[in-house]
Image (cartoon, rainbow, N blue to C red; front, side):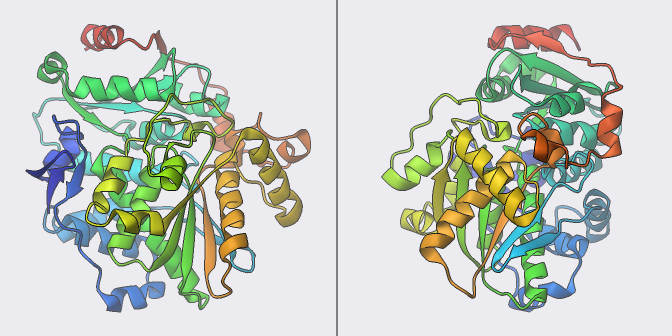
Length: 436
């Protein structure tokens, strides 16, 4: 399979090059030249397959012959070694739990798959791979665990000072070995801008072999399609064949993967893009005007993105029919007060504890269903992180009910290792050059 840049459709690179280069020099994002549609026999019988089996089938179709089947199967089965259950809360309301991996967040799908793909492609004697990643919360922890100890790689994680939860920060800053953390005095958008600028800096690219572990990397996006297909398989087992997905959205890689799955033939009736007050995309879907803006800090910190990178991929998917995009996707946005109300309602009515991002997705699904309810269409909202990551968000009555996994308790015993930087590129560049 070949890939092109969203800024230059005539570009042609291999999957390996797209993974290692991460972002084209023209500052676009890589997309597959052709998106294969999965055959009806597989889709109609998908309920007979396990998550790893589904993941392998999807990966094989979208990657083509880039990786031999036996090698790809080994990569997929090693990376996707945990469950992603669909849990019924009431008739036509289901939650897709994506936090059963090592870092307790949905980012484990992308980070583990990508780290193993990169390790597979790295050849002995090659230059060390320097992975740069900006995080608004969960990406960094997933990438850190995904790459920890991987030979000939070094990961540099940039996170916004004071804007991630304590547990998220511990996951970023307590690893050591080949993982280092930079505490940036700014927002996630500032962190992301530094990473993007590094990829287009001639001196840094000559000195280092740079790549990204953010969702701008196509190897992060592809494995996120797996859980959409698997969710549909679980519903099909229950006799449900029509589904809508409500997706908590920040950098729009998550819903971007869902739309890629839809392009591959997954029969999704509708997508809901649920955001916090960083509502660039919901506003575009209402007005037709795309206007990025500075991000605002919220309780749902992993979604604090004012200029989502992956929107260019979504726009590219629908470049032939822009009207189809606004027909297929509805956007909703909520403030912190509404988020807390949703958390309380979910706890009181379902005896279920949702993280703030998950609560926003549930609220958007509820609001959409009030206007568009159909008895034969299941609504699935994505739960992207374990609630233990956000202890300060919950009222005491709910916080007391959150079960903290042992791996999180162990983090508190480890020493924080990070360097503090401003948001200026020269300071970041100086750090990289001075810490080879």
